[in-house]
Amino acid sequence: MLLSLYNVMSSPPSYHTKVLCKYRVIVGVAVIFFVLVFFNQTYLNSQSFDSNIFTIKYQQRLVEPKETATNLSHLMFVLVGGSSTWRDRKVYVESWWRPNKTRGYIFFDVEPSEEFQPWSRALPPLKVNEDLKKLKIYPRLRNRIHTRIYRSILENYMLKQDEDVRWYVTGDDDSVFFVDNMVDVLSKYDHREKHYIGMFSETIKSNFYFSFDMAFGGGGYALSYPLVEALVEELDNCIERYYYIWGVDHLQSMCLADLGVDLSLDKGFHQLDLRGDLSGFLSSHPTAPLVSFHHFGSLEPIFPSMDHPGSVRHIMKAANVDQTRIVQQSICHVRATSWTFSVSWGYSVHIYEKIFARSYLKRPIETFRPWLRGRPPLYMFNTRRVSRNPCEAPHWFFFDSIEQENDGVVTSYTRKFPRNMTSCSFFGNTSADPLASIRVFSPKTPKPGRKVECCDVGYEGADVANIRLRDCRRHEIIA
Ligand SMILES: *[C@@H]1O[C@H](CO)[C@@H](O)[C@H](O)[C@H]1NC(C)=O
Ligand SMILES: *[C@@H]1O[C@H](CO)[C@@H](O)[C@H](O)[C@H]1NC(C)=O
Ligand SMILES: *[C@@H]1O[C@H](CO)[C@@H](O)[C@H](O)[C@H]1NC(C)=O
Ligand SMILES: *[C@@H]1O[C@H](CO)[C@@H](O)[C@H](O)[C@H]1NC(C)=O
Image (tube, rainbow, N blue to C red; front, side, top):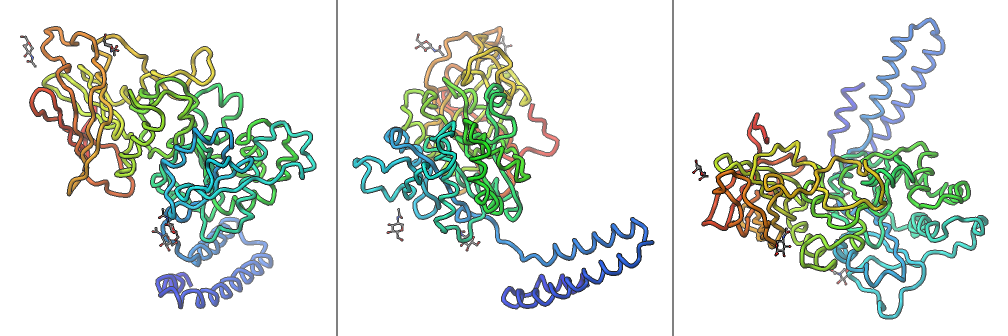
């Protein structure tokens, strides 16, 4: 029986479905037969009963048709915006949206003002949300704006544009998505099952006040299509049941929990409940593909001497060439001078005048503040304090330009401000002060499943360092 099913699996697709139907009937008959036999033979011991059930399940799994790999066309983006903030936030959507490639809609409270008409083709098509007043619970709603936002999922579904959609991805008008990485992350999950994928906030307080079990909406989250189908039937009931909940993403997590689905965490989604200078955070990103950013407008621009729109376009220059590497951290040691280089690809390079282990450099330098002030512990991760000690404080270089070569990519990083410190070395002859720029050579990314990379350093004159990223050697310790 098993063998013949295997043969069916490897036959050509057209023939496939018809034969499969026949086999479904056969499997169905077999199941009924087994069940009848078991009911008559109550003296069967539990062990053999279990093994027979296993056989039946296994056979059913084999009959499932083979699925193609998930790509961008399988994702439906459900974005929400507000007419009052659109002027400042439009740039964030434009930075990542790929016309005619990304699918989805952006939902507004009212039609945006005339200056945005006609609606640009470079943006997601525009929809205006339904009037909430038709809901019975309307007068009691705690947060009408969030309820409107929440119903966008239902309204998007009712557009009936979901052919071949495997995932719904939600986001705000100030969310920035790295869509190739999003596809890579979602491909790891079976879209035919119910999945809810996202990340909690970086700050402990936000999670404590809302929930540790919810995906924060600004960082975006993904729902597999079977989960969307189950959700849309219940969505208005959830609003009635939880009319007193303030946050839309909080409400969502409660509704999904009631449907039996809990959050799967992915470290690439970023709510960014942080303020101030994000550079320390982005220089020590976890080893996970960068999927999203939020709150860009509330943080300082991520590149020195650039404004918000400029800095988001700037990081996209690198992300559009090699998204799997963006902000991935690689560390190389130069024993001769006792220096450590830490590369955050497409964003920054640090030089420390001392040897540091990767386990230490993985911790972000706390250049930022939490969204809500308070006493430590503040963050969901460990940090390093900003230091004025020349042996602890790095020289900072920021991403400047990118070039593609035949067999790889060269990213350049330049020093934007002097370190203003003495050398760490006692003799004072190993200062990195003369270095003005750093070039990082990276091979074309092999897909899928990239790992941490190692690197070697060379010099070109006194002011340029060349870093070559490469696979780590077997047993190479990156410390
Ligand atoms: C995505 O996958 C579908 C099959 O599900 C295929 O038809 C389509 O051509 C693919 N698109 C791209 C851009 O690879
Ligand atoms: C998208 O497709 C439409 C129709 O197929 C075409 O008119 C338009 O120029 C395309 N837009 C872009 C940005 O490629
Ligand atoms: C170093 O000193 C210069 C000039 O005094 C100043 O502009 C710069 O901000 C200082 N850099 C740092 C990292 O403190
Ligand atoms: C720095 O100076 C000390 C003492 O003169 C010397 O031993 C050491 O080799 C020098 N280091 C480098 C990298 O030149």
